[in-house]
Image (cartoon, rainbow, N blue to C red; front, side, top):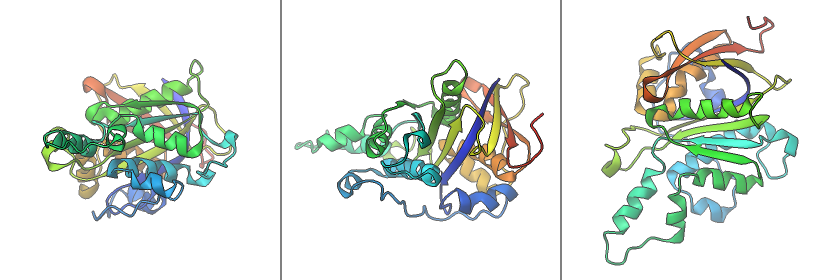
Length: 280
C-alpha cells in the first residue's frame, strides 16, 4: 500500500470550467448537463508561445495552471511552493498534430514546420510547462491507453514514497478529442483533463489522504451514478478519474476502484483531512 496526500485538484471538461464549479456536481453525483468546453486561460505563457499550442497542449497546460492556481503559477513563485516533479499522462499523445504531420507528408510540398515536429513529441506538454515556470525538476510523460490516469497516479505516488525522490508531484491527465481520421485509434468523444498536486507528507495544505493498492479482491471498477457523468467517464481516458474526483468532492471517507493496466485495478481509500476524524 502507498499513502500520499493531495493538496490541490483541477478539472476542465465539457461545461466544467474548473474544480470549484464542478465540486457540487461531483459531490452530489447528479445534475450534470454536458456542454461546450470552457475557454482556456493560458495567460502565464507569452503570446508567441500561446500561438504555437495545439488544442491538446492548451488543455493540458490549462488544467496544470488551474491545479496550481492557489499557489501562483508564475515563474516568480517561491521554489518551496512548487512541486519538484511532474507527471503528464495521456493515452496516445497529441493525435491532432500527428494527423497534421501524416497528412502533410502526403502532399508534394510537405508543409511540416519545426514547431509541428516539436509539438508531436510525447513530453511536449511537460516541456512547455517547465520552461514557462522555470522549473528544473524531473518530469515523466507516459501513455497507457484507457488506464493512463491510473498509470500516472501510480507513477506519481511511487515517486513520493519513502524510497522515492520527490516531496511533491504535479499529476496532469489530459485527452483532447482526436481528429476523425484517428478516432478509431483513440475513441474519445470529447476533451477532458484533470490535475492533482500530490505530497509525500501531511502539511497544513493537505486536503485529502489517499491510500493506494493494487486491488486483489476483484472489486468491480467504480462508476458514476449520474448517467451524463458516466457517459463522460466512458468517453475519455482521462475522465476515468471521475470516481476518484467525486470521492474527493464528497467530503466523506470513500473507497473507489479504477481500471489499471492489463486488466489490473487500483483500490483507493480517500480520507478528507478537513474532517476532524482521523483516518482509521
